[in-house]
Picture (cartoon, rainbow, N blue to C red):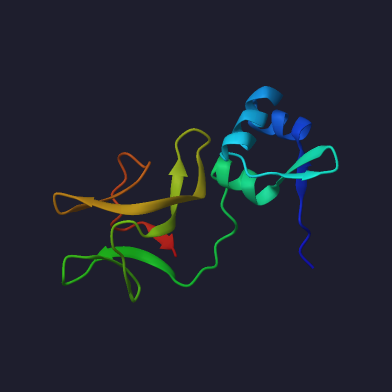
Length: 130
């Protein structure tokens, strides 16, 4: 059974690092979806995840090594990728020297593919999952 986790404004202040006044202004103008239960505002875990950019664990449909196919497209196993496609890639993190999965998306410019937020990494040859 999935639990529906919510937070009061005091908890949201700590999570987002914002003041109560700011949070109430965001609720009023619609930037922070919240529900009033009695005298208490409640914000869902899903809303906080969206604000913080946290994604749920991906459902893996395909994994393998990225390559350029005969049409010049970036491909993963039997899945051809296009600009905007989300994926996780396995990289060596230069800060802590550990191999980890990083969420990113594919983009192309001037016929070259790149991964958003991963400067210096060519997608070709990386292990990925979608």
